[in-house]
Length: 145
Image (cartoon, rainbow, N blue to C red):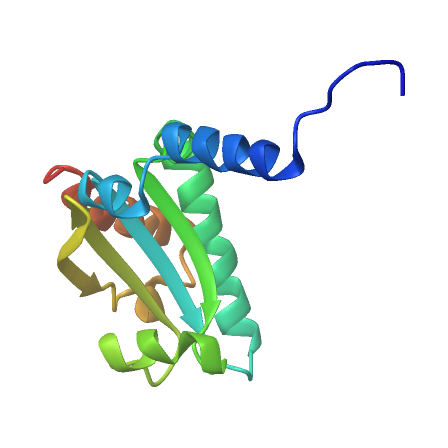
């Protein structure tokens, strides 16, 4: 060694942990301030052509009508297989038994309201009406944020 003193390893670890604690906001604090609308398209293991078409139409509605809100984080869209074990909480919570579009309002980190947008099954053959319907349902939930 050239006479330089090195910092003991445990001090470096302690310092790293201290910096992490200072600059990390606890997730519970983040969750409590969350105000967002979440849009879920739930599907099962078996996917028919209509189910895939509905998913694509929902994605089109999200992209065409809400691009800025998605980018800002005020609106979130997820496609979820409710048959997977890790997603069983959704199956029970929303009483899922088939492909479903759920719109959920989160205020202060808690779900305050949700609904199933059931008309997707009757409107899927008319793209404009489908997108208008989905956009309208989502917009109603965004008003409450």
